[in-house]
Length: 298
Image (tube, rainbow, N blue to C red; front, side, top):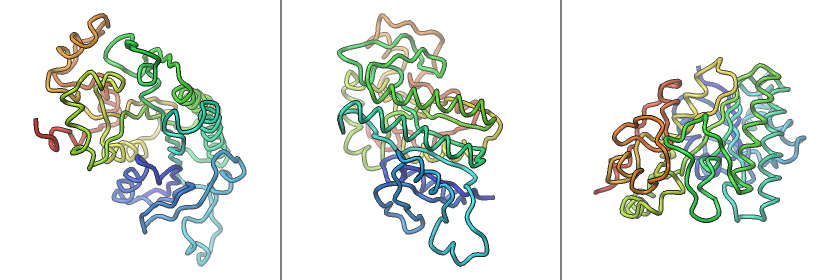
């Protein structure tokens, strides 16, 4: 049975592909955003998610204007997926990035929990691992990057995402609901394999900040759907990345060359992404559909 899903930030780069996948899986989606989603199957309710009142009302809204013709007033959705945020630093001043991202995440989680929603999925980030937006050339503590890593970023965007994870953990514990935080890797849309990936592969030093990892936007939608389907895990953090490293050389060789002083805590797969998705493969059953090697000629 398809779920009724409210998706915040669905008009963005990651959200529009995730929504497309959720629709293909049989779900019904309402998009909360300030910008319309160019998808005739999805209604966009213009919502400022930093306003708690707007969030509460939006989570009890009809999914389309056709809802008024039905016999019932709208109730809360089955699932809330929260992607709305400033997606990086340097769009607005740092304090605005932090305030907006932290407050919006709090508002969405609080409203969903108090309305009785039992499944919430939030977007965290690869930046929490502390190197993506670090000042200067900084090393990771160890490889692989897994969910129990001691996250210690320097920047306001990543810090806002850590606050989001802590908020999720608190509300999951208080309300006994499932809240899954996705540490999303560098999102790649289908057309970007032709425009970006050649440089990724041929200039590996440029990808250190992303830990030589990525997530295909369509596979991110698949991960969201797996989270919708998997119940009973309480609070969880999942790395949301594809399986493989974005280089021509195997993982262990690349890491010993690019990060010779960084310890490797376990044997890694030959082409395993350093920002490892082992947990979502083992816990959620994720199988990627879009390995970059399908689209890029070496």
